[in-house]
Length: 540
Image 1: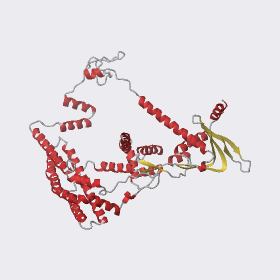
Image 2 (image 1 turned 135 degrees about the vertical axis):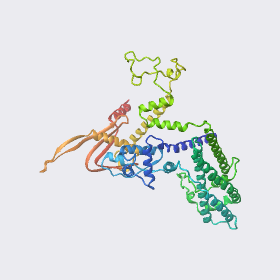
Image 3 (image 1 turned 180 degrees about the vertical axis):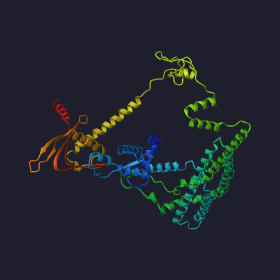
Image 4 (image 1 turned 90 degrees about the vertical axis):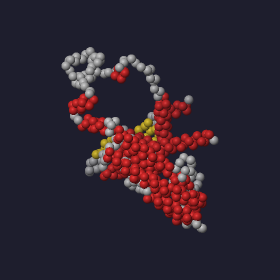
């Protein structure tokens, strides 16, 4: 039992780590380019895009990502795939060259997690610092909707399922919008009240905000919360039966039940109000159901803390009349003067503001091979390195003990394991190519096998020997024939031979697409060294 619980916890941690990796692109050095790419995908629905399509859309939009070339854009897309923001989409590729095939063989589409994160990021970038009004009128609609729903559910015969669906969906949309606006407003309020540099005009504005707007919010919530709690108490015994009746009437995506032995688990996110947990959250917002206090109580406490912050600012402003005032604004003004001043003017400002004068040279002689005249200014003279201990503590004595040698064994082990996995993958790809030789039309290669084949093919064509031929007909034309083309990998014990045969067509089917080779035949086998080694082993 303990082992299964530990395994479930590890799986949950791994899933959380995978989802959090999707946020990495927002903090990467190339985050502006990543955001521009993700916006291109978010602007389409169920569309898979290739590198040329994405480049064209980026140039239309402009910005920092408009100048990306195909290779750099491919690197950015592959990184987004590894983070989980994008997914690959297989398709058939028609290309005139190997380089064009490699660039356009992969198409990309948006993942659900990537779309959700980019949508939230755009919302933060657009209006994170704005003061959001509280949708207070929605609270009255929530109260009325709950009372009407309670009357219909408790009536003889109950409520019609379709009417119940419409009322519950509307109710939870209104409540969610109201709760979100409350959270956003109080977060903004806390950000403002944490400032201690408010002047009289700003203080007057925020005082009116608290005394009028916040008071109106808290009074309305305090007035309607008992009524909403009463309606929920009346409705609560009927909720399980009501949800079962709604599921029977319209299951939605919850009706998807995979069939067969190889069925895959499908996680469904139900509409708000279709689960008992949604109703428990709604009830806990207005009533103390777990002994931790309701959201209404937290709202009241937050208002009291806001008033305390307002009083703290009032005390500070009263102290400023006696000279006990913050110098933050003065320091900010001085910093702006430094930022706008020329170098020589900045030195003069520093002397006037802080009484800082020319440095004195204390006990650090220059190098013996440097002769510095006495009239040389310290500003233009050679730099003398001052030991850290002398600069910070005024002493040359060494303190503390030497740090231990850093242990890199774990990192080395990870690198060895990664290298072993890459070698095993290439060896498996080589075995797959050798087994598929001569019957490429009957098999579909994996992505790793196709990559290895393209690597061997490019090397073989680069090593090809061309022979010149001249026709003997009336029109004498010169050209080149492919005599031999081969390449091999001694480590993988694989050899590729390419022959040119007129009228032949070789088609390679793979998970990444199909590759057509005109007038080329491919023969894959073991290297001669591998054959000799096997022969010697069998003789011995």
